[in-house]
Each structure stands twice: as structure tokens, then as C-alpha cells.
Length: 418
Ligand SMILES: NC(=O)c1ccc[n+]([C@@H]2O[C@H](COP(=O)([O-])OP(=O)(O)OC[C@H]3O[C@@H](n4cnc5c(N)ncnc54)[C@H](O)[C@@H]3O)[C@@H](O)[C@H]2O)c1
Image (cartoon, rainbow, N blue to C red; front, side, top):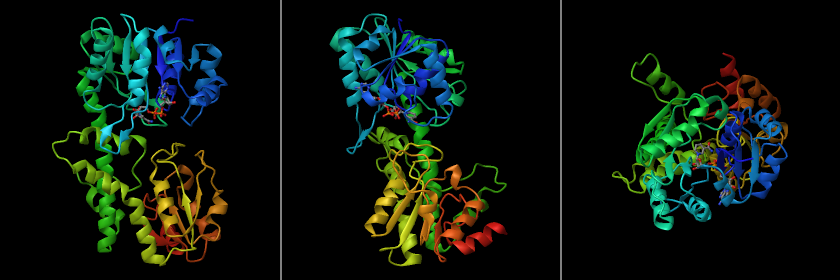
């Protein structure tokens, strides 16, 4: 088959996108250099959780519209090439573009006039123009005339891909109008509104979508720490702020990180006019695990040899994605206190104890990820029946609904029953 579109990078963004294009009737070539990943997908199995994707993969598999390759140059068999590679940040506050550079170098010899390259990854401002300039310098292909280069950032949240691909406005910023139109024509197949703009505006819109979320959650996290200092209850203060107040509200606290939120602010911070502002936001979110450990020590004393159950290792609710999860940081900090840490997570690839094993005789139980499985007062009753009598519950998400970040289990059961 001649593919209509190639997707380079079959990760959490690329694979659902490849499957969705195939499901809309396009012939798709999926390219990845991870042999295990290709084998898994080739066998019709999803390598990670994504709501509805198992059924979608089975459907696409049966249709024969998804072909796989481990060779980047094969991507040039399709006129449209979408790059969904990882774009981490260096610790030097700088985007790490090594995957993108490497794929561009692989594509250079096989690019032809008429090819369209769409950057779907999150990228620092100026990267789309850099790619256009790179192609012109290395191959004398002018973007917008000979080849087409655009940024169409992915803004869908993990777990919601199939729900949002057809509804979330798709931002498209091309180098020249023709590049924008080529990319728009490709993504129009999903039926979501297309917002046409310039490359740099598309880049900024994506980065700042994530910065907004990162900063939004830093505020209640800072408030949670302030409340501990003043002996106040953060959930009550938030209710006082938000109730019937007509000018917006504050979010709830939690462990805020994940592979995108933790790094994307760095793409703005690279050349910020307010250096430090977003670093401070990052510092607040990154210090929540330490805040929780310090709060436990204030109540339980030395944690050496105490059993601490950590519920959840994923970076957010109902996902198996552990990348840059603060739950792992929490585990590491607890281990540095010589506590006996027993994590449990029903979603992730890391092997963890069962729920029953984790909470049995626990001196403390921390809800690190607010998975659905940990919600509601019923879970609390099970913990009370199995944990140590004076078990400290740490629930920054208010998963149990009792409105306490730190409280002993008996106290919490009484509160949630009232
Ligand atoms: N995960 C999310 O929820 C999400 C949401 C929005 C945007 N993004 C952005 O989308 C981009 C991709 O994120 P992701 O989570 O899918 O990353 P990922 O690490 O899951 O996927 C990247 C894939 O590219 C492959 N790859 C890397 N180098 C390659 C090469 N040289 N040749 C072929 N394949 C190669 C990897 O094997 C991997 O499968 C990032 O820029 C990220 O910031 C991610």
C-alpha cells in the first residue's frame, strides 16, 4: 500500500494518532525505532493504557490500514509526515531536540518536493522555523513552496485521546499559507475546528496551555503548605474562596507533574523576561512530596522502620504513565527516612504490592495518585480494618472526601460518615 500519512514516533501521542487516522480511512505508516514497541503493536496489543484504544487497535489491525516500520526513511513513502517524537528538556533549561534532529537527518536524503512535515510534538518557540531553515540549508528545499512545514501541537490529555481528537480545536501554524493548508487538510479528517495561525503562535499556544495548568495547580499547592503553617484546613479555605464567588476559583491541591507539565515551562524559561517566575512555580509543585514527608514526621516522629503504604505511582489519575511522577519522588524521599515503603498501583507497569498487602498494619497511608480505585469513604473503612490502629492518612487530593490532608484513620472515618 502507499501510505497517505506517516507517523514517526509511536508513543502516547503518536500511536493513538496513527490509529485514529487509520480509523478515518487513511493508509498509515507507523515508524518507531523501539523494536519491542513495534512488535507489541504488530501483535495487536497496546503498549500502554489509553481509553478505548484496545478496541480501536483491533479494528485497525483487521482493516490492514496500519503498516509498521523501524526505518525513518520509509516515512517518506507518504506525502505527509507527522513527527510525534519526545522533546524532553535538558537540565540547562533548554529544549532537547536530539530526536527531532536525528529524524530530520534520516529524512533529508529521501525528501522530495511536495512532502509535508508536521511537527506534532511540543516544541520551543522558533523550532518550526528552525526545521524549515534546516531543510533549506541542507537540501535547498524551500518551506511553503517546495516542501511544507507546519506545527500542529497535540493538546489532548492522556486518557481522553479518542474523546477529544474529534472535538478539541486543532491549532495549525505553517511556514507560509500553503504549509498551513496542507496540514489543515490532513487534520480536517477528524472533524474538529481548525485554528490557523503562524508557527510561533502555535508553539506559544501549546506551551502556555501547559504553563497555565502547571501554575494553576501550584497555587493550591502553595496554599496547602501555608495552611499547614497556620494550622488551617486547606479544603475549608478553598471552599471559602470559591463558594458563590463570581470571578473564577482556585483549583484543588495534589501532586502536579508528569512528563509534559514538568518540562514544558522550560521552553518558555529558556528566554523569559521574568526569569525565575516559572521556576518558582516548578519549585512549589516539586516540593509537595517533601511537604508531605515533613508533615508525616511532625505527626509520627521518626519514620525509620515505619510501614508507609503509597497508593498510586502514576503521574495522574487513571493512567499507567509513570514518567516524571511525583509519587516516585515521594517514595525516594520516604526511603531516605528509612521507612518501609510499600507502593500499590493497579495501573502501572512497575510491579507493586497488592492493595491488601500495602495497607496491612501500615503506620501511614499516602494517596499519591487519585486513581478512581482510591476514591470514596468505602476504601477508608477497608484501611481502618487492616492498618495499624493509629494509622496516619495523608490525602492531599481529598480522595476520601473527608477534607483533611493529614488525619488519623479513626478520625477520618468519623468525619466522612458525618
Ligand atoms: N503524553 C502526552 O500526554 C502528551 C500530550 C501532549 C503533547 N505531548 C508531546 O508530544 C510529544 C511526544 O510525547 P509522547 O508522550 O508521545 O512521547 P513518547 O516518548 O511516548 O513517544 C515518542 C516515541 O518516539 C520514538 N522515537 C524516539 N526517537 C526516535 C527515532 N529517532 N526514530 C523513530 N522513533 C523514535 C520512541 O521510541 C517513542 O515510541 C512530546 O513533545 C510531548 O511533549 C505529549
